[in-house]
Image (tube, rainbow, N blue to C red; front, side, top):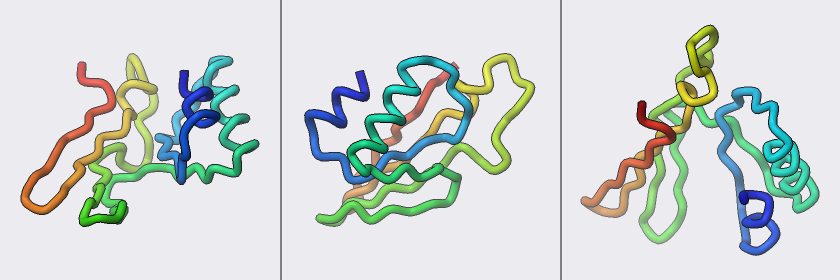
Length: 97
């Protein structure tokens, strides 16, 4: 799972939706990130990140404030990112329903 990724690979930052995740996996993930001093940033639409080598990431979702009271708040607040390198873009969706 994700805690093992942080243990095995260099991770510079974590983008998180900020939506409450009440599982033991989420708790282990947060604890591992803290132990490894990996900063966690709450993703919000409009944020831009320069990833180097001409690669840019733009957060398209979630908006602020987060969705509440929907049938599945966690999925409906999934992070959506457009990754661009030159004239090529990729759309990374969190959870399409």
